[in-house]
Length: 390
Image (cartoon, rainbow, N blue to C red; front, side, top):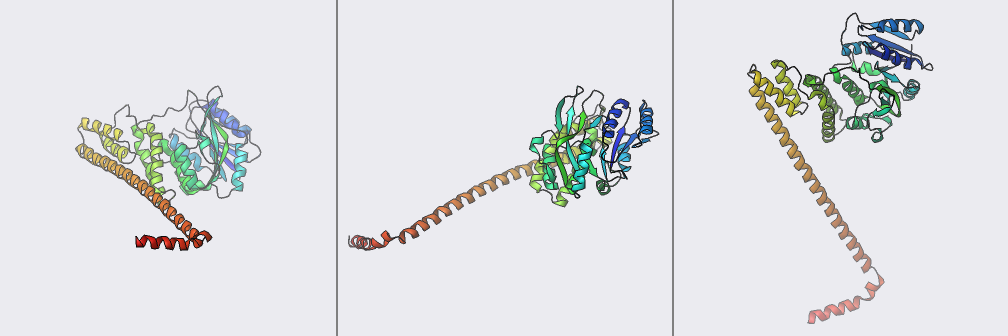
């Protein structure tokens, strides 16, 4: 059995696919194979891969008879993995030399780690590095990280790019087929599930290249993605509170960071208005689950204009109550934080006063035990007697 399977899903990207495949095949020190899942491309993808597979038996080609969509195609590709380790490589990304070799030996050494994660370089068409994923590597921790450490950085500073992660096969067994459930948010959902339950080894050097180019997949970012993102946050909430990975207050702060980071994906109103039957539940999820009240009421206003759903007015009232309760809770939590801060300051002042009193008592005891205090005792007695007479 090969040690590593690199899975690549593709559609009409013959030249970029070739670059990706060739970057993988450069590794000859570790047994690998490349599973290419072609979603019924209409260009020369089939011809290229067929010829490449005839020359290198490490390439295994799967072609869908019809286009099934990127999410289903990706799940099928992951379902083909039988090796000890795997990498989901985008068809327009590249692996860097030594990534597979180094990551393989890390996972061989750290048997409990669910993945070996490297940084990913973002490069423009000229080949210049313009950034990394995660975008602020100087702020994150490296080495073997437990879920608590990893999730804090992951939620604070951004998710990792898939192409530079070597996963252990057991992670797929843990999640269970189908592996991708949440449309464009599936990469985030997948990583979160694994990171909650497995330690990982994070390496401070790049393992892959994310290419920025004009023909990148056009993905509509609008309110139609609200249900998918709601599923992600629901799973996050349940996992955090069930496993107790971080405290509730800290998690809510981190959750808000994640919401703000990905808000632009679900926030815009769709170019074609949603059917009224979808408007109300989407609005409810946007407000109650994602905390995006502006979008929620914009969707409800659209539904109200259609005047086809008698429950729109009721939903308006419910969401307003939810928002009001959320604002009240936020205010009470703020006041509670201020009270805690005040109590902490009072405790600190009390401890300081107790410390001063203790030191004063110690000084008095030391003075009374001194020779000069004993020798002057008659004078103090005479002084007291004179005071009494007067």
